[in-house]
Length: 456
Ligand code: 5AD
Ligand code: SF4
Image (cartoon, helix red, strand yellow):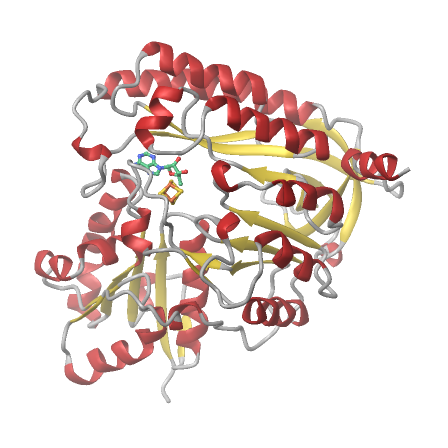
């Protein structure tokens, strides 16, 4: 078979990034190899996100950029991901030079669809939801990977229907993969050199619901914890309503589970949380955070927040800032509310002006900047375990990696360290990273110390 080249542009969340990796693996089997240069590609795929308006619009500008490659080289052009799922055939109608629209459940069908276009020149659209879960089956790399971390999807979709969110409509209802399949995939990744896995799902806490086997998310974590070669486990994303005591306890029991929790709160105002249909209050969110910090004092906490949801008054915004003050997040991902067609919130009346949304976002981000820096400074002089990932972007003499709490650390060292866990003394904290020096002294993290103390 003649080798061809595929160029993929990816927008959005980790699940999209991982879908792109899976697509590349799958296409390699049909002799399509990745190129980073769109100009030489035979197939150009845009893997899209529709969670907010801004990333959604990017798909049209990206398509405009590649139109000439269709005309000049006859490249096949496709759109995948959430915008594809949402728009379906309308995308084909709107963009005459587009060949393929492939929804979030159709990834395994990609090679056949591509072949169909090659042979017949027909334009294709596949956006049906797959109840048989074929789309969740492992697509495994065939050769050792040149990376130390990998994503593993454990469930997909969401049943929560928060009033602002498009995800349940574009990723479908919650579906979990069998534990046998997930464990097989993690073992395979470990054999390919992977040291850290990040388990993905829109709501990992509800993992196991609807499966024939009786298994909870903490039980799955425990199984993965015993896989040889895997040194670190992370997961994302969680819903505060489904965060169980059993999961909190896992942070003191499972050695490989890293001390980091991403727990989106979206708003600190009970009135807004209700309108968002989140199913918890500010107080119950804070209680969960307190419990996490009790069980694992060194845990880093990050979250997502939205400003300018319809009806958000100054008082509500102050509640959000108050929650931030109380939790002291290590980092925060903040967004201006963006109405999404088809969601319940899109029909709400008391919309917030763009100018007010922007002001609130700037105030919130400025406030968080100080907290993040202070959190990073708390690590100065401490010894942290770092998993070395590769060369630092800042200096060829430096390597880069992450602490168990997911903070980036740059330090002098050679590439032979990649894939190793090394003790690094933190010498300087910045807003987005830490600088350190490799040391021989391995300091136990406070969390581990605490659990040792608790056990006595
Ligand atoms: N507008 C703004 N932010 C949104 N998010 C999800 N939907 C919207 C929306 N309509 C944010 C939430 C979510 C993150 C992935 O994106 O904070 O946790
Ligand atoms: Fe969207 Fe809410 Fe589901 Fe998260 S929990 S994916 S915000 S509907």
